[in-house]
Amino acid sequence: MPGSVVGTTEADGYRSLLFSIAYGMTGSVGDAEDIVQDAFLGLTRARRAGTPVANLKAYLTTAVTRLGINHLSSARVRRETYVGDWLPEPVVVSADRPGPAEHAELSDSLSMAFLVLLEALSPVERAVFVLREVFGYGYPEVARITGKTEANCRQIFARARKRVGSGGQPAGSPPPARRAESEELARKFFAAAEGGDMAALLDMLAPDVVFRGDGGGKARAIAKSISEPRPVAQLLVGGLRQVGRLGALLTAARVNGRPGGVIHDADGRVASVIELDIADGRVRAIRAVSNPDKLEHLGPVSDIGRLPERHRAGS
Image (cartoon, rainbow, N blue to C red):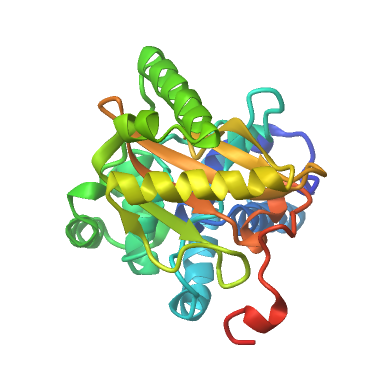
């Protein structure tokens, strides 16, 4: 994140919370960082103008939420014309190279699956739902932050929950033992995929497993989701075999609070990020982001999966 214009103050202690709210609103790391920075700029201007800020946390939370609502309102057209499946920009925390504190502390509730469901909501619905469902704000606080009445917020939340459906319940942080089990399963899963062990893969995939990919029309990705264990296993083995021939490597990582991995090319550039959704000892969903625009915040982006300009949508 760009350097703080406020300096090292009490406000900096809220960066993790503010980033998480902004990311929950937008599903974009870059946009979330920009929104948080804009909120800090607003705080600086308010202080210079002599505006009293009695509750710093409330001021910044309100600023980030309302900036997020404005951003979503202007970004809706771009989302409607998106090529292929849309997935959020992945938040990746590596075991050996942890990311920024605000990324590392991101609520485990903001999985890719949950953020995709939130795309069905209007900007205000999303703000109310995220504040209430993910961060546990009471209705009086949600009303103050969004500028709505308490009664209105209750109606908005009920409507949002109905639109999102039962799948909208965030999972929260798993207990350490279960998290360790999931990470071990992910390690075995990726090892089997890289080794072409179909039998092991099929044993670890849930019967209703789904694979989704997001290339954004700029990188190679499946045109539509694939379901059922065997087709998913074949896709994984074939894809990892192909990138392996190019010298690419897959390393384990935490992706949006879930077990996952990052594929780097022979030069160490990011080519793709994979998130695994694990439940009851099986992989029930796999999400892969290869859209280069969604990987830039992770470092230099590889071109091994990029589509030639003439093949890109809209070209």
